[in-house]
Image (tube, rainbow, N blue to C red):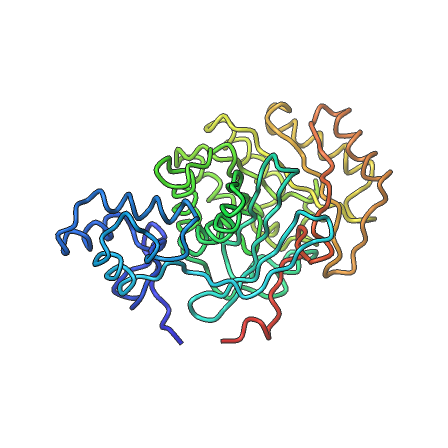
Length: 370
């Protein structure tokens, strides 16, 4: 097994700790140093990054605008990708696809491509192998935390899909940090990967099309607000009161509903970006009329109603023995939020048949074996 490399302050791997690092895990400064030692001009770094994010090449050998000697040296010093596809499933909806990716140490993660009628191609990325948050309705939480991903391993999930989309002349247009893991629990790598994705000289994805989600890690919500990173924030709320939320989300015992809502309001005030509250609908647990009214009241109490949006997510089959409410019950819940001045959308579930829906990503132990 390859020894685990140390993750640096900006989420990139220390080249000295990893014998053959992926190019996506090498900081620009280190790549420039490597090039200078070989008397290569600095602009080669931008060329290499451009090829890596364009997604049309399969490896260094295909970077034909670089000298062959440099291509050979790059192939000897770095890996082209930090993840290796080992399986893929396509949903019956004709759009959603899920990939199983092998990491450098033999562990696995899942990532999902969600096209929307040709108008956009959204990628759902994982930030950890497994997840430490143990939300009662989420399959990933049953794994526990295996390890954090590096920034390159996060970025390379997008590169994986970008390479497939490039074949048909398309690109990744949106990225959501809603796969396996808690993004703000792996803060530095999440931040570094987001910066790489919105870099105009890299992927060039609009910050308005990048969404980072969190279960409600309050100190990191405040930290993210100060980063000057104009991305969207999605906060997993799932209940308006501490008793209910604490029963399904252990993190609520550390930061309660009011603390999470207050941090979300601070984020909006500082960034001027609206926060989306994710709300998985669990029949008989968090879908009552009283809870809808309480949710609207609490959101309004912590900030302007125009600054919040509730994304209602029908429960997907998974752990906990929960059930999905009826369509009528979910529509009623959304209507009560609207009556309280809160914008709400009932999300259309996709990819359930391949366990690619919200809360369904999970790698079986056999797949994760080294």
